[in-house]
Length: 223
Length: 367
Image (cartoon, rainbow over all chains, first blue to last red; front, side, top):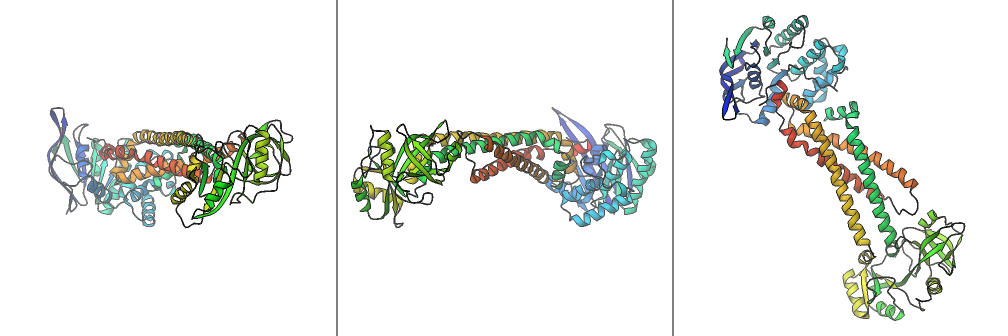
């Protein structure tokens, strides 16, 4: 079983009379408990590819299947529902809601998707416990360290029990030691749940935490 | 929606500017409404106080109390009309009122009347008057004898009545002969004869439509112009223009209220683009996000309304009696609805902007 299949995916942006090809025809499959590292320099198309995989961007051509769902023809409303239920995101800038506590940042997912409060609260507390943040549940992001904020972001990505978690440069704001800690945590959390993950990074030192590494350069995918 | 509430609670400073603006706009709306109601009620109370179905003027009066004269012959003709229940005379004289111990002369509308109503008890004895409670603000007290007009006709104040003024002059309700005496003594150039009034208050038997009743009366007398109570109210000089002017100013203020909210939340939406992109990326719909904006605009409007109402209540305590503002619960409720509706509408203006936020920008891959 594959968690993600990209089949002939291409992404083109119009630019005046010309067009810019962000991703050339790309084929990729990620197993349902596999951690894939997607590496490449800035502007190589890795974030675009990650966005397509997560239903944030629609491809210009090609098919995208996440789990058993083909999202290629989804409209915006369907994509919103898909993101709410099937994927988790950890963003480069962490992007926690600054006026919400750690627990509330996890519960945002439940609120956005209309999940019942009781079970969502229990799940949030359980995730925070697993991430070693039990004592930080009531702290605002400004009161957390960089590593703690990243852990909260990971918890938020796991709130909807996704089959696929997408990480965009999860260690870019951390020093090497903390980056390795976070990557270890990601690996433990993802593997412990049998969840697939795609980690976009330009830091090749972090690829050792992945099962497989794929490079992307100038929009071309290379194993 | 909970996020929206938490932001309000934890970052109240962000909403101080719009809350302050809405508070001042609410104060303005309530004050304008109070002035409108005060002017309207204090100009027309003498008409509304009679529980009339119709008021009969002489046909040459052009719907004016002061130009109208009706007599016992007209009364007899009205009473003979099928559908007429009660008929009672009403006459008004606008004169100054000297209150013992007060230097300023208050404005008075001495009203001679015959029929008791919900607002008026049966006419008092000769030389006595029921005074509109607004006269109390000018220093009048029950048991005092006030002097009316340049001829200084004495009237003893024996009770208060409410909402009975005419043309912003304080009502003094007396029995008919006392009114005639007040009018004739002070205005020898415009005396009132025995049995004469300016208008007759007509109450129907309840078995006939007002329009039909009016048509029958004017047809029977051939020399009267009969108005419904509402038409008589709006025939008071300046009332229609005054209502239209204030309503226009209030309408514009409500529009500005909506505009202020719309502008604030439009700016806030620009500031929150990153947050909204993130929330959309993790599965939040535009509808959910707009609902949060609406909740915030509603909460800010309600808080501002409360503060504005408190400020208005304070202002009402220090207004001089010469300012005829009157603060009614009905007006307060209408203003509440208007302010909240304008705020919600203003909040909804952000819908399109929020809808257009690309969730992919959360990950730095927006188109």
